[in-house]
Length: 89
Image 1: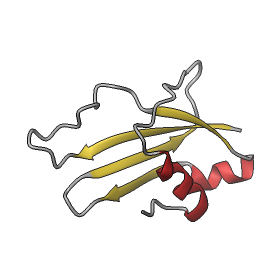
Image 2 (image 1 turned 30 degrees about the vertical axis):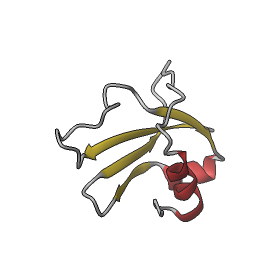
Image 3 (image 1 turned 90 degrees about the horizontal axis):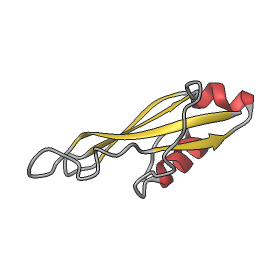
């Protein structure tokens, strides 16, 4: 089964409160078993000590949706969610 993971940075600790690549869409496709899909679908939040916070939403793809293939260097978050059920450093 195909799911989509989407990365956003709702909390930015930068000087201007923005993530430099926030204009870009950060989505990747992940393949999982139907049984695993039910456990993975949802939102996962991670906060760093410096005030930054990332959100990874795992969901079913919308009809005809294409992914960007870009996850801004944070694919480790998807691996952590799949392994631990949460984002761990």
